[in-house]
Image 1: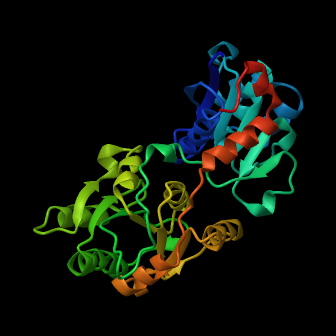
Image 2: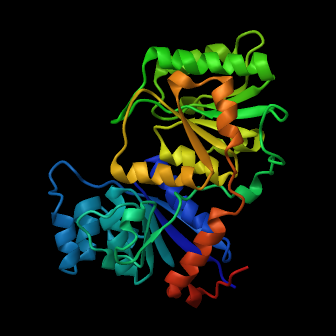
Length: 349
């Protein structure tokens, strides 16, 4: 059995790359896979958005890579499959696959490029399920949940309190605007849970966390009898630290501005509670996705204004963590929808 090489195109955004790596993690359920990360940058300043899709339609993939990304054909690594996520990788993904004559997978929402340019388009939005070559999945996580020990043996409640909890802190974005008093409420809750339950917190910030919030978390972590047992500053540590947090946590609290953070916690098979500021909103597709996580019983949502040990415990009691693996189902989907993989003698384990 030879090792399959997956060419993972990266636009430099860690969130997009981790989604693509999540597909690679699922592929490894089928057999040995080598992942080759290839950084690309779409030329934006002078290039009309519609030009590259037009060149693809005219059968000029080499021109797309050269003109749109400054990539020569000889620069393109040899591979058996192209994978990417993020809008700036769409044309490069389609062009690379066409030049190499290999299958390709894209995660996300297509713009201007037809689905027929891909062997499989993965989306987390049920509204897109009817589209050609699309399949609906949870947002893929780069880590394998089988590498994280199970910590859930009974539902949480007054007789079974979380010993260690994880907190993923995001921040302001287009539709989310956190106020100072709401951050006050979050940090007060950490201290309340420590004094009431004895819970210790494993905390990680993210790319969008404001410096003032990072500073407050760091100061609390360094304080006497702190509720924080471990603090990860994303600005210093970078991505790739969440596996440690999930492995240490009985439950996960997550600011609701990032559905990717929510999804990763769900995939880690932990009870997940999302908290949102008063001033927030969702695009319709995102609202539907978050509601799906809730409808499955994996996740519950609270407002920061109502967050307390009582409301948190009530929400926890209604959650049934995910038991199966996202990657098993995704591996089956990849096997059935990408017949070209079978030529690489990959077999389901």
